[in-house]
Image 1 (spheres, rainbow, N blue to C red):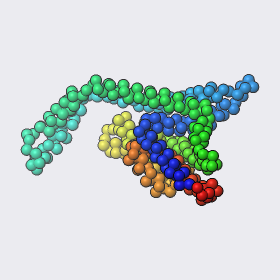
Image 2: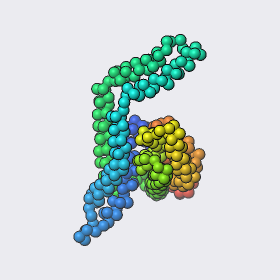
Image 3: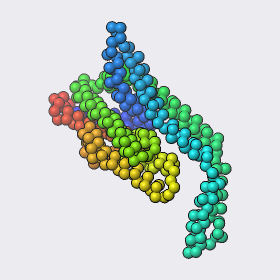
Image 4: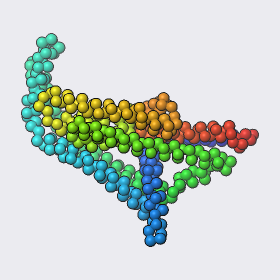
Length: 362
């Protein structure tokens, strides 16, 4: 009995070490598992559909499911194109000399105040000259070759990652239950029943969690888009989509969504007075406050606490532990990973108390 738990501990430790050392592979595998879980219902339905008296081949059903995801991604991306085009137009028409003249006055006033109270002893006009010199040196000192190389490397990494996730997801869907069967084959016969129960419970909880996330994203997108449209904010759908996706990042997501909305509102609005700008910011913040309160009171308790059956304090600690280990990616995947280990430990503990095999002296 003690030997079994020693082996179990060593397996978990080895799994964690492997996941940390081969972080890219682990990330691809986790993303593939999530994508496979999302596409499996649609793939199964398409596979069960009869065409000319025959089932649609599973590989074809998987390709159709992939096509649906790609089409949805393209349609959602189209929401950002008008905003990007608007920003490019604004940047191309900016009068940079006029901007320098506009900021020179407040900087000179600040410098006069600093000189008056003897915080600085430099001649008047030095602060603006230093600022202008710093900006010029920064632009001139940029290594555009390194910048382009970074873009190419990032694009290549994303492309490789996309191919890897697509490849793994395809075979996870093609060989339905392949990963589960292979893991169960490694399980000793005396612990087979307990392992099946553990896998079943983990799959159910993770399925509930993913379904809850989809509901949360849809609800936040709907509330934010309707609210921003009602208060007259441009690109309401784009802001709402960004906020819904950013909300996957616990705690920081709502702040990112509201900040993005304010930035878009400021960059696309025409304000004659400062009060109009302040009123616009207040309207955006009011919408996101309502959305966040609704999310905190109704959505998150339903999704996180009930779907993974964990106390909110556990969720809080786990999320920040994930942030410490893996940053934003760690925060997003903290709850699913914690769910797997938590349920596994609890099931084996219950098995230790209930199953006869653990009561046999070895």
